[in-house]
Amino acid sequence: VIYTLGLRDQGQHARSRLVLLTLRLIAITALLTALLHPSWITTLRQVQRPVVAVVLDDSASMNQPIDYTRKDSPTRFDQARASLQQIQSLLAPTHELKLFNIEGKSLNSGVATTKASVAQTPLTHTLLDLQRDLTGQPVTGVVLLSDGAETDQAADSTVFERMKLPVHAVRVV
Image (cartoon, one colour):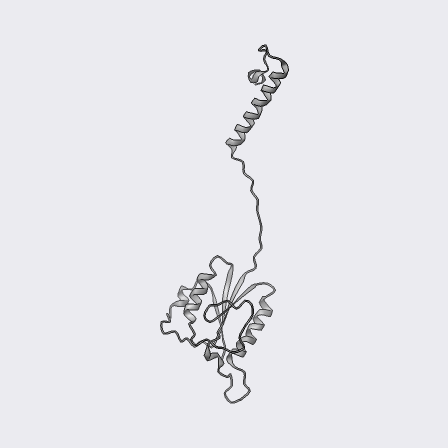
């Protein structure tokens, strides 16, 4: 191999033959490297906590008192907020909680209202919208805090058949 690469005596100085040999070896190394398609692979491991979406019903029906016989009875919304605090204390250490109102708007900055104020309860559309919006995230389920009063006239009773996420309903009555 060395003989064919140029170290045989061709009437050139030894130093120029050595330079030519070095250049040829560099060219052969570059060619072999290009043919082998080397690549640098970096693996980045990012640990994601599972996501739980919590839907808090803040519709007008949640302003009803739990016990009609008592004047100081808390409302359904108050009970839903208390349930939400329990859920947060239990799941926050191990899960990422994403909080939404009944219209599907994010409430992750906290429950802004102290009173339910949304006119209608579009449960079915909200659940389908959440499923679409949370696609690609490691969602383990949806917790629905509601009295279950659906006011959407176009409500589809087969919404749960189309849901790919488990829905855990916590009835607030």
